Image 1 (cartoon, rainbow, N blue to C red):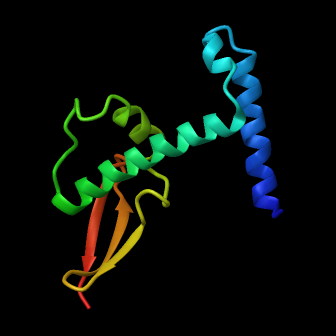
Image 2 (cartoon, helix red, strand yellow):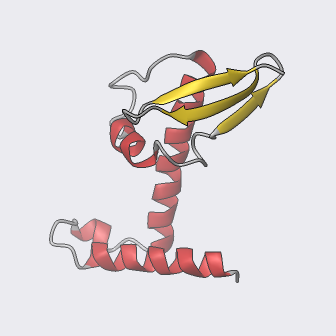
Image 3 (cartoon, rainbow, N blue to C red):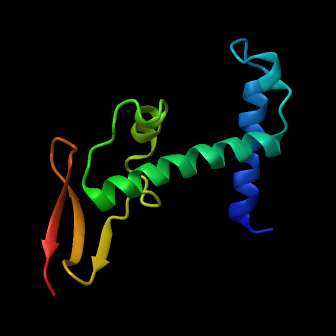
Amino acid sequence: MSEGSKEKGRIWDKIISTIQNSDMASSSLKERTKASIQQKWDSLLQKYRDIKDKISRTGEEPIQNEWEFFRDMDEYLKEDPSITAPITVDSIHGVKHKIQKPENQDEENNIKK
């Protein structure tokens, strides 16, 4: 097992412990296994990625009611390079670099090949 896998395991153990000791978590949530909670997170993450991919392909903004967790997930994951690559390449537009504006907004800087 790699060091990264061990660290992820420790993080999931802490998440499970936090849920089980929470006064706000339902009893059914507290009874869930580590694997079922990881599976739920993976499902949420996949749904979020699917919506982000659709936005990227079509240029459309997310429909507010398309998915109730989108805004929360986006707030948490918008800076994650595994979700939004800082550099992309395509055969039509060439290389695109994502740069941060001072206001913390993304802007694409296109560089043609």
